[in-house]
Image (cartoon, rainbow, N blue to C red):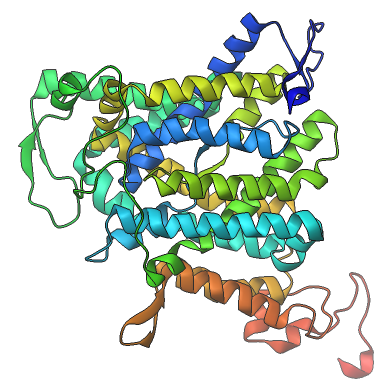
Length: 475
């Protein structure tokens, strides 16, 4: 254990990389750690807000879980564990039920974390190739896509209507920040958009007064300020996360369990597998090391970290691409910087006033950010397809995945008994996996497939090569 914390101190030339087992002098390492905190910050507290969980607790557990992850992976996989977006749609579905409060949300996610942990243990002993056999890129891309696009009604029905003009302005700012700003600034576009939207809402309150809106579907609009700091003034500077969530459940609470809710969140495990696998491979490429032997450890660490956080009412976790981007820009892969970032996050989580400021984020600002973030989650599925060369000229991919996508995104329901049904993401995921493996490798060999073949089977018939003259007797 002691050797894990014995980083070799280096002073590299400009552009020279710093390996995970190395570190810069502590002053520069602390600065890099703070940079990692800023990079993960925006998304790590936005997703707890939209899931109805406490952002302060999420920030604190992100630090605790990052340390757990680094220990399990023996400091070989430099990564930060922030709040996962993979369960946001499932949480929205749980909260749509009459008894779907926060304790059932965290209970379902806890089980999903344990499942991911078990998958990690399996991968550790069976090898990373087992992932690709059960969950090939065609399947993981489809599941990630349906999870993201399933969230569209949440934006349209809850966040956007609270202040449509602030939402539109925040979304426009975030698009410009992410695409036009250089380097590191583009990677913290979520945080910059939050600050921009917050300030814009403050200016709108000063210039135009209160707005008439409500904070959810079916509620009665009322006049209110866009920003209210009543809770901020009452919050302590130092203390453990405490108080009540919007549904009356304590911020720190024990999980409750319901089979229907558990089935709703399990598809998120597939998204986490795809996400973690991709991130480990990215880190391996950047550090020029073979991290396949640590793939199972990374998955297990993330799964058990999610379970740990959920056991106390916290948010699910995942490795963060934002922080991988910081490593790519700085070429500093030192795990020492991640320990610094984790400690800073834990200290922020112990400041209730900071959490109250985060919780006061106006609904319109969340509307502008989530309309982009949710779309990005969906398009990550398409990115998985593109990067892995998934061929939609193959009917196994085109037809085998189509039904599950529509079922998952459209909210199709399959009633099994009077008290149990499958719908939305859960049903869509099952259909994607079952239909794909039902036909994969079993049909006739095809070199290409077009949508014309659905109504014209002869579309698969061989066609003359360009310039080839047909047999005159058949003309």
